[in-house]
Structures are given as C-alpha cells and as structure tokens.
Amino acid sequence: MRSISVAERRARLGVRHRLAIDVRSDDPVEIARSMTALHATDPASVYVQVAARSRTAGTAHVEQALYDDRALLRLLAMRRTMFVVPTDFLPALQAAVADQLAVRQRRRYGKLMADAGVGDGDLDGWLRDVEDATHKALIGLGAATGAQLSAAEPRLRTKVELAPGKSYGTTTGITTWVLVTLGCEGRIVRGRPNGTWVSSQYVWSPVESWLPDGVPSMPADEARAEVVRRYLRTFGPVTPLDLKWWTGWTAAEVRKGLAGLDTAETDAGIVLADDLEPVEAPEPWAALLPALDATPMGWKERDFFLDPAHVPSLFDRNGNIGPTVWWDGRVVGGWGQDPDGGVVFRLLEDAGSDAVAAVEAEAARMSAFLGGVRIIPRFRTPLERELSS
Image (tube, rainbow, N blue to C red):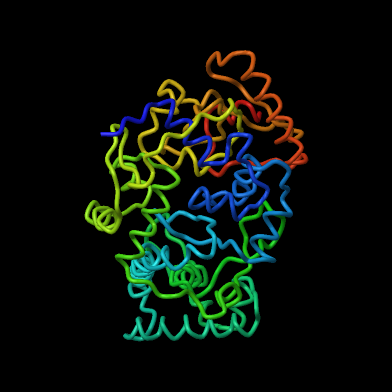
C-alpha cells in the first residue's frame, strides 16, 4: 500500500489548490477547475478564493469569467450549497446532484402549496404550467429579477400561509420557490448581482444564455463517477467519510460513484489509480482564505492541516469555518477586517518569523484586492468577530 505522509498531503494541497506561489493563476476558470468547485454561499467569497490563488487577478477578472465569457456558472449543488463551477462540469452535476435536488425542492414546496389549497386539485399540473410560463417569460426578457418575472407571470404572486394559527406564522409568495426549482432543474441560472460584487440579489437568466442547447444529458452513473473523479483529483487522498460529506450523497451513492473509477487505496485514503506519484513539496507559502473556502470545506476529516485546538476560534457552532490564515499547508490563524476595511490577522500558534513575514505580505495583498470593501461572512466565527470589531 502506498504511504502518503502528512507532509505530502500538505504539499498536494499547496500545489493542487494553487496556493503555493509558483502555481497561482490569474485565470478564474482555471482556478475553479483546479478546485473542482468554488463555494459560493457568500457571494464575495468566490472573488476572495480567486484572489488567494492568483497573482494579480482583480474582481473584474471574475466578473468577466462569470458574466461576459460565461465560462463559469453559479448553481445549487452538493449539500444544497451554492457553488461556482466551470460550465463543462454542469452536465455531471445536473445528472448526479441537481436533478435529485429539484425533486426534493418540488416535493417540499409542493406540500406547503397543497396545504394552502393552491392548484385547484391539480397542483403538479398547475405548478408545471407556472414553471413553463416563467421560463418562457425569462427567455423573452433575456434577464430579470424575481419582481420583474412575477409581473410577467402573475401566478408567481400566489401567496401561501406558513404555519397558520401559530404565533410565528407568516405569508410568503412562491416566486423564489419556483425560481429555485427551475434553477435546480438547470433551466435558469443566477446571472449578474442586482448590485455590487458582494451582493446576493441576482438577476436570473435562461440557461440558454450560457448553453445555447441547454444542459446536455448524462447518465446518472456516469455523472456520479465524473463528480467523484474531479473531487479525487483535487482532494485525494480522501476517506469515504470525506466523500460522503462533501457530496451529501448516501453511502450507496458514494459506492456507485467510486465503482465507475479506477482507484487505489493508500494509508491516508482513496486516490485515483493514476495519482500515486509523489508530489514534490513547493516552497513554503502563506495564504489568507475566506470563510467557507473550498479548500478547508473539501474534507470532513481535517486533522492533517488543522489543529483541533484552533476549531473553537475558527468555526461557528454549526461547523462553518471562518476566514483562515495558512502557512505551508496548515491553518495557523484567522483574519478579518478592521472598520476601515483593512485586513488584520492573528496567528494561533508560533509559526516562525518567515511565516509572519509571508502572512503580512499576503494580508497587504488582500487589503489591496478588497480596496476597503468590508466583507461580513454569512456565518461569523469568534475570531473573525473579534478581529473585525
């Protein structure tokens, strides 16, 4: 059995994730492909993930890849989490993840609408008709907000009472429900934000704007194998627990995904069979990664790069990781922004003078990238709150 040490796993991480200095890129698509998928729960984190792995890329590079070249696309995928991915990955994600997610979303929203008496006894037919009409309206408009679409398709303004009779009951429209379901089906996509690059209010576009023929179909087994293949190339070696957690699949689905690939066992976990060659350690590197960055979120079992003693400072109570400071393949601290938007950090261990100098340089580079724009993570962590107060 091939032995892969902790040092080699950190070297793989530095090289594969484009965090080592010599492998950084100014191409957001190349970076996203290297990472398999970029976490996008916080809109700004996509830009910061690219900045951390680039030399000189700015926000305009990311916006061009997303909205002008349309080589990247934002979608709900694994674990019902928002990601940004290269468009060539979309067919696999659609068949392996999003199709099932669409079924679950329709079932969830459908029950709420049925309980409210929507659809006059044929909710499924009514809802399908509303979805088709919404998609058609969006094609005609080219791009639109939810409010603009509900003006074009009045049935989107249908109201549903949630928790009737309860003190916490409320009434909501179905516009977002329909749009999310259409997005999961691969029929519409989130386009430009209705604001700055840190905004989470998106203008919707028909998927035909990105892919003229829509999302190509792909057999589910083949799609699962492709998702696992890309994941292993980026994160291997991994354990079955890592794979199950990252995909959000059942154990049976994980086994199906692995069955379609030629893999090898190492003492550190599973890798692709053609990925057993040693990885040469890069020069020591520092990086500042945003909250919910794709690197730390790639594994469930993180001990090879994260001291458990740091977890209370860097994670919230639900297990969401905040902004982290890295030195040569391991987490050594956290960072935030002062009231003026400048990047400030704290090391949680003595990493040495070389590490301090390198982290200071990265902090200055990140401050220049952000240009005074303050980013407040959606899930705030103790150290980030303290540094940003």
